[in-house]
Length: 143
Image (tube, rainbow, N blue to C red; front, side):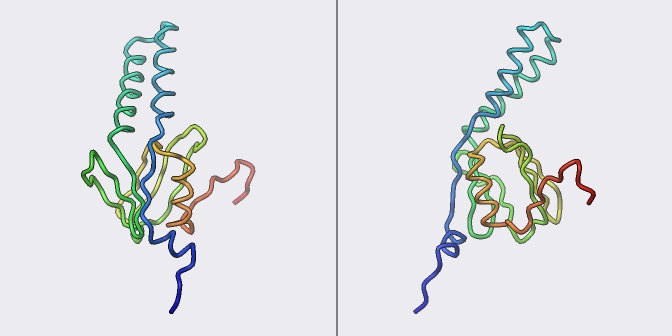
């Protein structure tokens, strides 16, 4: 009888990420600040509406990491499934803010605002598709 190691069990477990509303709140605060500074009202309104839109999305969308795919849920309905076997690369841009998740499948690239716990997102990505991570290159690197 063989037992699974901890990492094998982690790979087979499903993980639903908790929401993180920092990005929409930051964008909304920027919109409000620009409004108070008297910047172009249409640009300010656009930024504020985008922030509110992302805030709503952070409450109705969920990301689930299964053993074989990244699944996007909207109000308990599966919206989209991204099988890991089709992934070519991924990268997190500005995960400290949080920022944006980029990943490329065979068919197309995707950009998702990070509306979820960025630490858990990064750890799940490294666990499920870590070998496909494309680290940020420093501006001083020659390659």
